[in-house]
Amino acid sequence: MEQRMRFWVITLIVIVCMTITMTKSKGQDNGVKWAFLIAGSKGYVNYRHQADVCHAYQVLKSGGLKDENIIVMMNDDIAYNFQNPYPGYIPNRPDGPNVYYNVPRDYTGYEATLRNFYSILRGDKKAIRRGSGKVLDTKPEDTIFIFFSGHGNTGILELPDEKVIYADKLVDTLKMKTSYKKMVIYLESCHAGSMFQGLLPRDSKIYVTTASNPYENSFAFYCPHEKSPPSPAYTVCLGDLYSISWLEDSEQIDRKTETLDEQYLKVWSRTYYTYDDQFSHVMRYGNYVNMGNYILDTYQGAGQSPENDNYHFNATPTHEHSYKRFNTTTGLVSQQDALLHYLKLKLEKASSVDKSKAQTELDDEISRRKHEDQSVHLIWKFLFGEDIRSIMMANLRSDTQPLVDDW
Image (cartoon, rainbow, N blue to C red):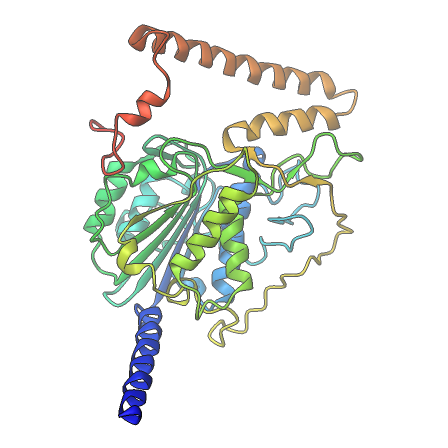
């Protein structure tokens, strides 16, 4: 009797272990791993978005994804920008490696357009205007990883051509794309959750995490401190907290064993607990219930794969310049305040000749913001009166409803 009981206990343990292993392996196949990486901004002040995307390329490339299956869209105006203290060098963290190394420039400058964005997403080669011509030409067994880093607001994301991606059209396009097995989307922007809340079905083939919920900002990270002597070499934030969190996690862990949900929880924790008074809520959308246990390798590659065409990205901080670590604060800067942070540092570092111009730029930006705040307050007062708390607006919608009805 004891032997029979022992047999069944051991059998049960084996079955449980096999189930866990199979669950973590679910989603792996012999299909092609595709990736679409988008930096949605332009200008040196928005350095961090292109740095995030370049870093993402290095993570995916070292994981075994091939250049023919990685599509990069960015303005490409920071590596050799006159304000970059080390031309051609883009670190995504203090003392970090040059993540710009060998990054494909598929769609840059005037090619980084809304038209091309949707053409790439649909896999429509004929609709592409200029650029490399690469699109998500996926087959039914292929997987797709999409990463966007840039500016957003309620229901919109901005692209370098200053046109916007509307949430309803984005989700409709995703719904119409059927020739793939599974898709993962990581989205870095303010109000990022508003792109999917109440719009993306939970029974879709798509797993989404966002840097922020529909009502809040996300945060820039690795920012130089304006009060740290000596003045730092950089006047911009090098990355974004959500993006840095998943990128650094993917570099450090075994992507053959960590799941999407395990990475989500790590990123959620780092983004929420970095500072008590400054945080955003990393969110999940789509079919996260069924896809959360899929392993990262299925979408990001395994890391140091023999299939990476002998690609050796050096993750150590070495390059031709005598690059000195600059003082940084681990405090966060709201994406909406990153421009002010930059202009203050620019003023601090300005020579006597340039100081007047830098002061004017800062004053103009502060005046513009005051004018916008006053205008919004007047509209608010007219619609709701003085006593209505701003939280009322957030409470009008449940988390199963989109924030906008009429797009």
